Image 1 (cartoon, rainbow, N blue to C red):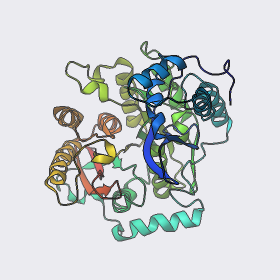
Image 2 (image 1 turned 30 degrees about the horizontal axis):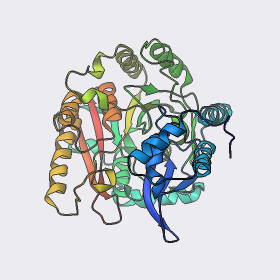
Image 3 (image 1 turned 180 degrees about the vertical axis):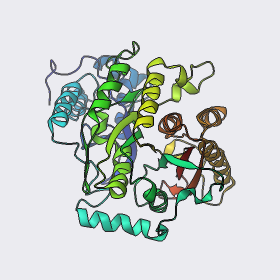
Length: 430
């Protein structure tokens, strides 16, 4: 347990995942680090919940006690609170404690490693190469088409080239059909691609922000080289953003454990292995603040719009495909809604109708229509793929497309919450 002098004077609890559990007959709050700086979890007795709320960085420990007691919390011995603060700090759950030093240490290790280590290999998917190939082939097998293409559904008078892909970032088990369908459909069209630009949701990132990394992404299927020259070019642009210190790399730590780009890269490795293509992995911070009335358009962000122009220029010189690693709606009690949304309910049908409007905008290549559909309902369905899909539509400059594999995936044990996903292939006229 840290001494009084080691403890932050005004403890500030970082954003954490909180669930209520029963253990050995007692009720606890289970705290998990969303950012995964620590893989440990912490059980906190429910009566201490109000004390946790007081750890907001504005109160000393004594003031946090006063706050908790004023709101009905039971009296707790000082040594228990000291121990709680010490445990939170040891687990790097306090923003103003040991957290910053641990992030710096892990980020240095990440940058010095030969490649980015896959965070989910061995847990979300097999870690052995042969096992992973068989696992993915099992999902793709029903959609193997003997060379048929996703653009077969396009009008015969349209000559188009694949420029964009929408791929989920939900786990492979729940998203199996969608992953298999979209990646098998685009497989014949990406053999000649020289550069894949992958925009992934940064679940822990602020925005609007594009976060780069120079690390190569490794999966059990191999390592795909990051185009570091292009990273440097984009970093020079983003670094001139006066609103964010070190815009291109301020959130680079999030690349270490973020699953969105990793899950897309696994399928990308399966589809484009040994082609020599390079990748540009870009995490996209939330666009949520841009959804309010009067907020500026992301198109008006000078540095991001310059990055898009650069990427479009690169795409005119090198065969490039833009990929959004993105899910759609997150609704139900698991995501904070009061209403339960069981299968076959009217609410599910309403969300599906909302999603279809988004998918129509996507396959029209209209990023503004896509954005406006989300803004018009106040992002009631929590579209966590807003930023990467928007960026992909903008960069790919697609004029048409097809969507496939729409699915509402169970998100709680009672099946009253779900995540919706889809795949899409986007085309520009040649």
